[in-house]
Image (cartoon, rainbow, N blue to C red; front, side, top):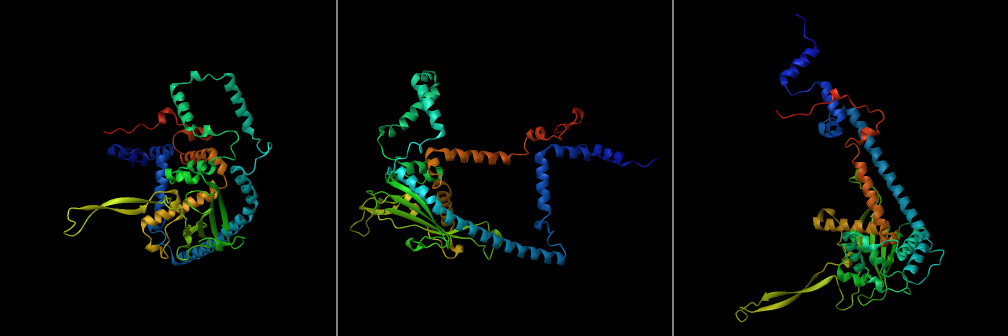
Length: 412
């Protein structure tokens, strides 16, 4: 009797098991199923690492060299911190170049300056004028619109009732900043109905970069910021408060934490402070008075109740200027305060990096379209490898013959 070959053994064993495919078939299944292959690669990534005990099992000389690499990594973090300090210095420098442009924007918005015909030329204007001419000539028949579109036109007309009262002799761009802020979901959630009459007096929002190389006198702000930025909200005289400028300052650090240097990812806000708003009598929208029933104590007042007025905090955009304090020891910070500060820091960055530099695009909504497209592109990138589209783009891919296609697994 001859010895059985490996093929015979694997074949007989497969017959006995009944459900185990041959090794080459399993390999084909993995290669043809990107999700299964990705899961396998993820599992291998977890095996080769500290959790598997691989690092602990290395010889002492190798561990010693790893420590040297970590010290090098710490030095890299320090150099990275210097890089971001230089970037901040450049921001301070170029802020002076942006300053006259933003001042001109402010003057146009508030009607102090009328731009010239040349300054008002824009590529899309001609297309809009052509569309308006077509509408006047009756080339677009509104009566042919579907009921759904008609309803949308009706809603749009209702929303435009307020602005329809504006005439050609109106100055500047009315409610410029209020509209821009309300177009951003994150900021619109902060703005309450009682805030809008106040924000209609908002003339300008500016960012002031502070640092060792800046010419800004930081002592004028509630919290001097050796490295950071200050948001200035300029208001016209109004019946709500006497301040002409409300400020919000942010202090930043740009060096790795000594206790956790590898967590360094660039400049981070470490504290923030607002300003005191001089509210006029009865106009403080950040507070509201509520009346509560209170039973009288003592035998003489048994069964009697009285109403007690109590002042409590009210939802308002202007709470932005009264952020929670950062405790000296972060371990003392509760989860609610940490969440509030995290949101506050995010909003501060958004004002600085998006809203102020691109205010007109948030006013028109074009910036929101760009952000939506960016999110869609990021989502598309994350979906690569899923489905069969990648196979069509691969010039080396050759589909297996019909006879080699793996059969679907069936539950027995």
